[in-house]
Length: 146
Image 1 (cartoon, rainbow, N blue to C red):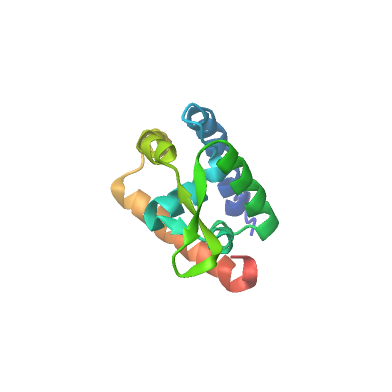
Image 2 (image 1 turned 90 degrees about the horizontal axis):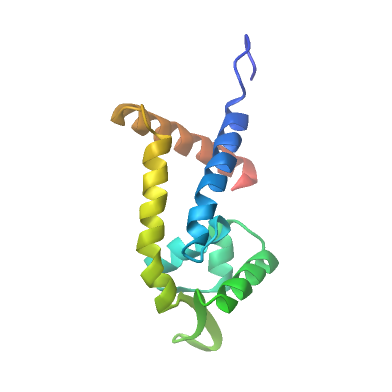
C-alpha cells in the first residue's frame, strides 16, 4: 500500500501500540499490574467472574497462555478462582478486592497517557481515527485474524 512514499498504516499502528505499551507499563507496575493483564482486568471488572476459556477468547490468546497469565495474576493477588454457581465442577476467575481497589488509579493513569498521546487532535479527528480503526479491526476479523 506504499504509494509515493506513504508509510504503511499498519506499521505505524504497531509502532504506536508498542510505544504506548512501553510508556504505560512502568506506571501500571506501580499498581501491581502489567499491560498484558489489561484485557483480563477490564473484562473481570465489567463481568465480575468469567471462565478461563472466555478470558482467552476476549484477550485473543491461546488457552495455555491464558492459564499461565492467570496463574501469575493469582500468585500476585490480583485474581481468584471462585466456584461456578451454574456448574459445581468448574471454577470462574474474578478480581480480588486488592485488584478492584487499585484499578481506578490504573485507569486514571491510562486515561492521562491517552489524553497526552492524542494531544493536538480535535474531537472530530479522534472520532474519525476511532471509526477508521474499528473498520480496520472488522476487516482483520473477517480475514480470520480476530
